[in-house]
Image (cartoon, rainbow, N blue to C red; front, top):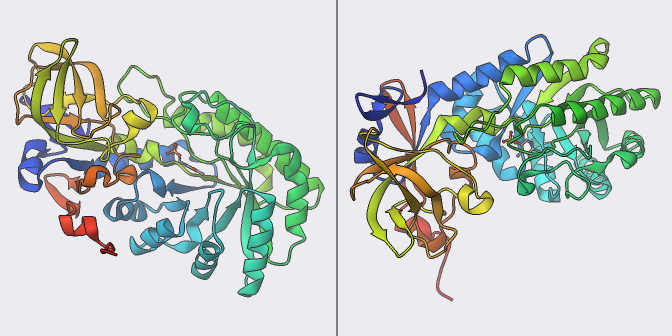
Length: 418
Ligand SMILES: *Cc1c(COP(=O)(O)O)cnc(C)c1O
């Protein structure tokens, strides 16, 4: 049964009416289904059965403590991109040894914190970063376990802002330089080479780019073997897409698993562990943003539905022109007409949908903006001095406020008059 579904014309998350959450907690509010996070995680895990593997959940997709707590209980590791995310992961009860640290701009301070915590692996993205980590590790008397992120130059055929594995992107090290850099790393006393890594992009809707990238990693591992560098894990990043309800076809985790299995087959005798860094596919479908209709209006060309959520709460439409399914919380089976669903912010980019067929909604009605569990709350801001929305985790018939709505005091925290 879908996590968000109608019961007698009323939209529920699991066994809780969304209208009840809105009444208790206010709007806008993010609502997550614990059951759906667990289902998605287990489906991904099951798809990789038979391959020794570790799932390092990409914390940046949704880093709310209460969500991380669910992932910790499922036995996930973490892919982090800052020391702040490491802090969150450890506070959620996660262990440091199953953390991989990605990102092109790790600071020396962040490296020290991660070394001190004893993280599993640094995913190195440049020759300069390699040299700095070597020096930092030696200065604190440690050897940093590393992989080098390569840029396999494959087109993930996704939105340009979330393509990361093309030659023109800032991520990783060119394939042609990779082998030399691995040899250099192997000779550095502060470093211990353990893995190869890539991440080619997000919201991928085909398996072929994964297969192409894996083929290049396999070739690299084999080449490194000839150089006497023993690789113990291959990290293929994240990126598996989800269905945003626009008729996208996305590979199922099982299809993804098949492609990964086939791609890694040449390495199967080497006892190499697979590391994956999924984010969106674990939490994306498990979350929705619930918002209330404030006003309706017509200008000469259009009908607008103005809601109390805005681009500061959910930035994806403004940033990527992305599509989110939108449903009324009550009485879905009314006659529809096209409307632009927009927020109160003074930007034309502040919209959730354009020309969307929705019932003619009354002021005060609730809307459910679906598939908002990933890159929703995590990307939210205080733009227009709007306090961040509350977040709620539903578990069966009960729910917990895992993040209180921000107050006006939060807005000014740390500020003062000169
Ligand atoms: C963003 C990111 C991920 C997660 O991507 P999804 O598309 O959410 O699965 C994994 N690894 C790295 C390095 C990333 O930057």
